[in-house]
Image (tube, rainbow, N blue to C red; front, top):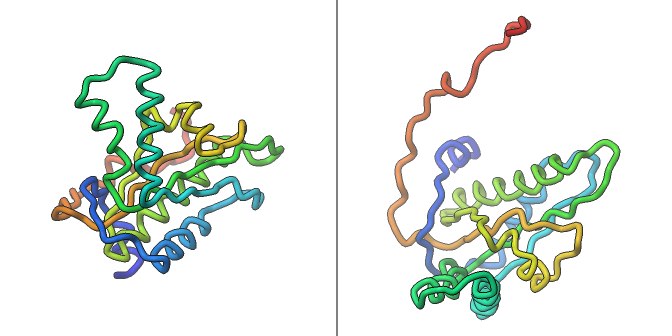
Length: 188
């Protein structure tokens, strides 16, 4: 598969299964992530891999954090606990935000987001399925503490990677004219 095909045909896959992602595949994913734009070469991104039993342990932390905020039904408790078991590999994308005279915080977040997009595309090109999620747990201080994040770090997303457990949805044809317009130099 060439790069253009991977970029234009990639879709998110929510239903993922094993086998585990190989070390070679993981290396390729992280090589792709590290090619993201990085103004000032400040390296704002880092990634945590959650695999095997660690997924269940982090799921328990998710459950504790949710239960601290509200009473959960048995169904919601089980769903929260099993959330990270949806894929054999969960990658936590972390952005380390620093004060920089030329690189605003938004650009640092976008750099990590670009790295995640590169991993999504690389996964698709290797025949893997993946999906990028955020949600309450990405904002949760207890989760950040459990993962060892510093005060200046934020979770940019959870990337679930595995093998598609369903047929891939077809890519809808997008009308480029709905998203692109020329600017002629005249103020509106």
